[in-house]
Amino acid sequence: MNFFTLFGRYFILMGRVFSRPEKTKIYVKQIIREIEVLGLNSVGIVIIISVFIGAVITLQTRYNLESSWIPLYLIGLTARDTLLLEFSSTMVGLILAGKVGSNIASEIGTMRITEQIDALEMMGINSASYLILPKIIAAMLFNPFLTLISMFVGLIGGWLAVVLTGALPSSDYIFGIQYLFVPFYVTYALVKTVVYAFIITSVPAFYGYNVQGGALEVGRSSTRGVVYSSILILLADLIITQLMLA
Image 1 (cartoon, helix red, strand yellow):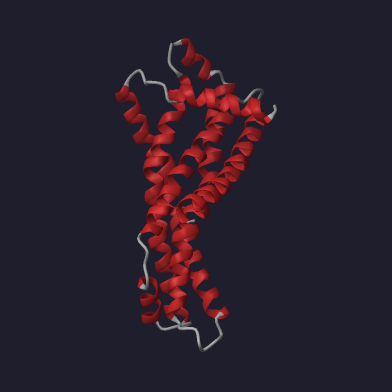
Image 2: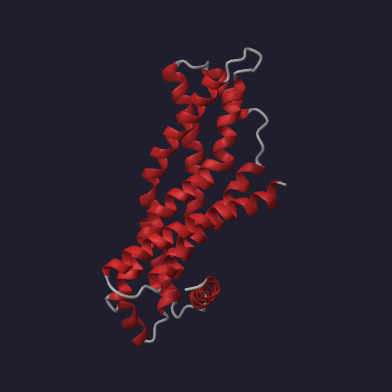
């Protein structure tokens, strides 16, 4: 399947996904369910990874700044800006692309090969909108909270690292994470997160929805969904950075 065919089929599917829903109440229930499945179930892994990454960033920065001319509070500033600008949005997005994206592609792909989607179509239900739209909305609503959690927990992880290792005074780290704080960095990260949430849900859903064959093809579609969504996340990161920070 060439690029333009793939591109066209994706936008045709998105047109069906965003068509007017038949019963709004059903969609509200589905969105709440998807928030739990795609969002709340990802809180644990985001917290664990963010704590360790915050600690590692802080310690690596400290051990690579050997000059006495460089103030120690810059370590806290570096950890803060790294988490806000890149890790808590893009890196967490890539992690969620693997966890959430594979789940979505496998779920919808299994429904396709077991003819559950065909059954929904026979009952007059817009299967694309019913299955995919709640996932997209749930991720776009909840993923910004995951990003904020990652920012906060990552900074806590850095603080725990300096306290437990004595790499630098805790007061210097705390001063550094407050020094020259730019609130726009948080806005920038949240904008990226919303875009990533759309990519993470829509691309794997597209591959799952269009799968043909059996269980082996479902696995392949899941892999393609994760790979292409990860590539699109990196591309979106580049474009949004140029648009918002240039």
